[in-house]
Structure formats: C-alpha cells, structure tokens
Length: 113
Length: 115
Image (cartoon, rainbow over all chains, first blue to last red):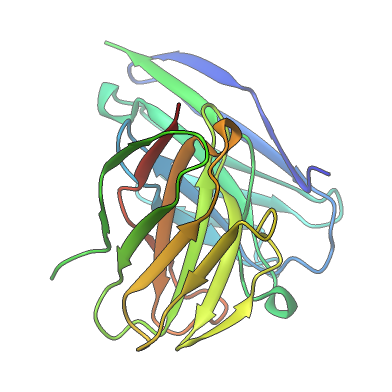
C-alpha cells in the first residue's frame, strides 16, 4: 500500500529552468511533509519541509506548494542548476506513528548545462 | 560536528549467514531510525528507538530482523539467516527528540549484498 505517490519518475530540465515534482498522499493524519535530496552513494538530506497549516514555503530557490484539500504537495526548484542533479524524495509523517517517514518512490532529476 | 556514521559501508555475505550493521548517531540525539532502501526506491521504515527502547518496530519484515540500542546511543541492526531479498542499502537516521519537525539526519548507509 503506497501512502505517498510521487511523480514523475525522472525529469530532465535545462539549466535555468524550473523543476517541478509532485506528490499525493492518502492519510489525512499526516502532519509533516519534508523533501529530501539524495546524491549517489549518500544518505538522503533534508531540503525543505512544510506543515499542513501553511500553503507555501520558500527557501532560496526551493519552494513547497501544499494543497490540503487535494492532499497534494509539490517541490519547485527555480533556476535549476547542474548541481541540483540528484534524486528527490517527498515524504510524510504523523505524530501518532513515531514520526517515521513514509517516502515516495523518488524522482531522478537531471539538469543539463 | 560529526554526522551519522554507519559501518561497514559495504557488506557482502552468503545466503544463510548472520550480519550486524552498526549506526553511530549524532551525539545527543535521542531518536534513532532504521530504514531500508532497495534500488530505485524510496527508503522504507524498519524500526524506531527513543532512547534505549524500540518504540516502533512495525516495519521489521520478519523475525530474522532485530535491532538493539543498549545504551541509547549506538544501534546495531542484526539480520539472521540472510536471504537474497535482504540485499539493499540500510540507512540509519537520528533526530534530536523524535518529535514533529525534528529533522532526521541520515547516515551514508550500509550496502548489503547477499549472494
């Protein structure tokens, strides 16, 4: 049972373009939605996170948009750079479930120079 | 400061053998999580420790998997009678207190290959 669905599976963007990755969740009890970035051979690293009482959060070139009624959230990477090439995972967690992270299946982003 | 460290970085074993994977969390972090990441997939939760106790082991796939954290710091994930399907990267993460919004810091993982 996949509780967090992520798309697309892979994404190619030109340098300077906008990368958009989407996630949908099923469990309305989720109360924390982080995005993680993972480079080959490394563990995931937190990029940005949002709570359901906020519709948007921006940190530098990275923005999360959150739609509670649709149970969807997305990551926007503005002015994408080749160094952003990595795998991105959305995740969700909830207070009554140990705050264990439920991850999406990942999006492999390639930013072409 | 030092991040989460995991040893070994790679482990190759034969089917049926026993393996131990070690995690050193960030000093002072009371919460520790183990995840398993198969190729091309997102990490999947295995077990969560708050201090010395396993507060949630609902992700352990079967009784061949066991984990301990005897002094509330280092944790060891133990796999008995390994199977080829156990091959994956095993990730450890720690957070300050396991509460909402407490960032989970991941280690680099141990790549387990069962031949």
